Length: 148
Image (tube, rainbow, N blue to C red):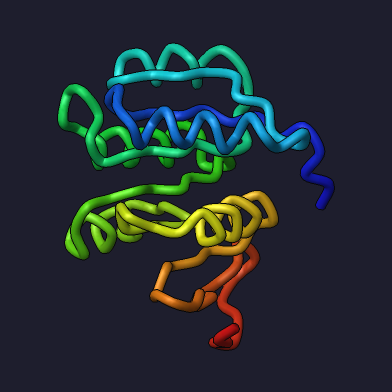
């Protein structure tokens, strides 16, 4: 799959994490940040405007409804990949259950973020298990479990 100029939307409350995500994303020529939202309503307006390849969704959205937003996103735009960033194992499990292709625990390493973005854009579902990744399935169906 060609991932050149993949469209990305970042959703999360203002702060250092969101600023850091935007800075990191701006360093990739193959990624184009097409929108930034703080809460569900703003995210829905952006997502309705044009197809999006990847949503980076932080659990700390301004209206506190990140998992509801994820559920709506996967129902309305199932082809859009989602990387969910949470602060607890329970949030990460809930995000996986709602369809997030990748999840990261707050405090992740930049390499983990790059690996997750690449995995989502290439259609692999991944869960962070520090210090390695564990591939669980692809969008085409189950795959053998493999550790890197």
